[in-house]
Image 1 (tube, one colour):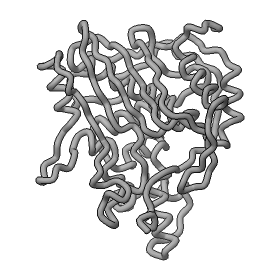
Image 2: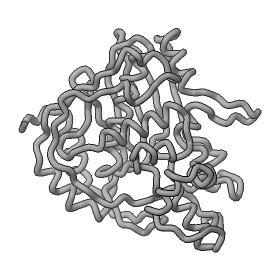
Image 3: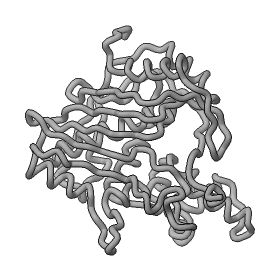
Image 4: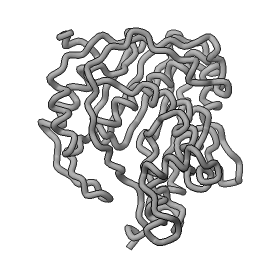
Length: 321
């Protein structure tokens, strides 16, 4: 489908833009090289198809499972592991490995660590938690007076009852737990990248703008596009609106050096027609949501393109010095 008006070309053009104009940087924790541009935006009209990329096969089940994990406010990766979703395995393992290297726990490979998360409930409780992750910030933001604020439920209520207002915003950027702003020992050791959501109702359609501060464009961004487009459609369904646009605003937009050959291969491929996302009428509120209520229709793609994920970012206490 060599149709340059196809919305997937926004993503492909973004890849080419980074190759052509990117500045060489290094990830501050891993030392991995990357090339980066700053400040880009893509728009996807959800009435014209669901933006699950077609120039490589996408792991839709993992995307949907992760989104359900966020929506239901969970923080333990056991939910993901039990459903075969590996997206977050590396981050609690990174914490575990650091402690095991200090002699506090037995040495385990990543594979053995994940297997113990799956089979040992007590181990999962002890080592599978990712506090302050998206689901907790969405559904149980820790207020200074001890309350837990359900931002997502508030957004839904606002959209239903005050659709013309402009404040349906949800954030996960909490300085209390980030980098050197946090108290010693309380800083997150994993990055929060998709940090601000702003919903808008116009002409009976719900649109969503995501600001993503850090964008792994080959591996992460395709997941983020599909995930937040699906979230927009789910919230629209719950609130009684038609889906509008998903607007993706990207901050530091980068390609890791060990992804460049895969990117070049992807750029040789022409997009196929976008599929449809079908939501069951059972999607009525946040608390009853389950992945089984969402189905893809007509997804066709090119073969997968695989690359190693950089477990990037986070905060090391030595950075205070």
